[in-house]
Image (cartoon, rainbow, N blue to C red):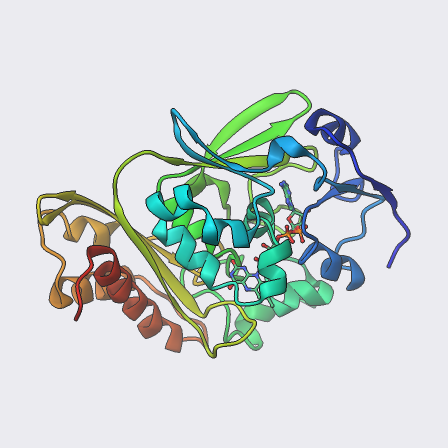
Length: 325
Ligand SMILES: Cc1cc2nc3c(=O)[nH]c(=O)nc-3n(C[C@H](O)[C@H](O)[C@H](O)COP(=O)(O)OP(=O)(O)OC[C@H]3O[C@@H](n4cnc5c(N)ncnc54)[C@H](O)[C@@H]3O)c2cc1C
């Protein structure tokens, strides 16, 4: 590991002053469950590490006029147990349950989950986000069993955050601060598919810190369904997070967002539109699942994910509507 300077500021203002213009200047350290392994593997080699865990203003869950505000330092465990989050955002709680190690849940934070780097083995081996080597597109020509099934590239990794799809479905906003002020980004726009390895996969600049996420007050029936290879310490193969605004027993409007299938959470608009005015049944949920994966373009080794993603949508819709099929 390259030697680095370590800072542990007590305020957000102080922390922001310690960041730099480039990713090599400084990085933010929250729980460290991802960052430390990136540094040990030499994928990230900053001159300075800025520990934000001592900053009280980034902690806690509060009810605000805009909705439920979850501080960036709230841990995965706190998401699981917080009454406000449990009442308004079962989709997020279910995503938190999926982080299946007690240690990671205890240390890992909401900000860190959103900003965690992709698990793509080409990226982790130092080939960059676009994973090109000697003119070859490694994710297209190599072992791509866990890669994206949506999109035309050039990025083929999948967004590693299971919180992302849930927050997109819930219409959440991400609060981001820099020394020059605060901005708010819709969760749906926070994740970006980079066009080159120089770009990042989230809309956060090197001199910025994610401070909170806000889940709006809208009343929705929401749920997440994850499909995993095994009950172990690993990321899901595919997830679906859904949020339904009801008109009586029928769906008024729906949001369906797939996770771990594209470089960003994948919003299945057509499938969601199909549900308007319908009651959620095994049949309507299955049809929405099929529609959600209609435009999938799997790579050579990951066609299996298409059926899994369709099933995740079906089961998330049934769970949200409380229908036993
Ligand atoms: C075995 C294992 C299984 C896992 N399974 C899942 C899973 O199923 N689903 C899932 O979603 N996740 C999963 N994770 C990932 C886990 O949730 C993340 O590692 C964790 O949430 C990261 O939080 P952290 O606070 O430790 O981040 P850190 O490791 O401290 O940081 C991660 C990255 O985010 C940046 N960062 C952190 N906080 C901020 C901030 N506030 N503002 C700006 N940048 C920031 C850091 O600079 C770094 O680049 C798993 C991890 C492990 C090790």
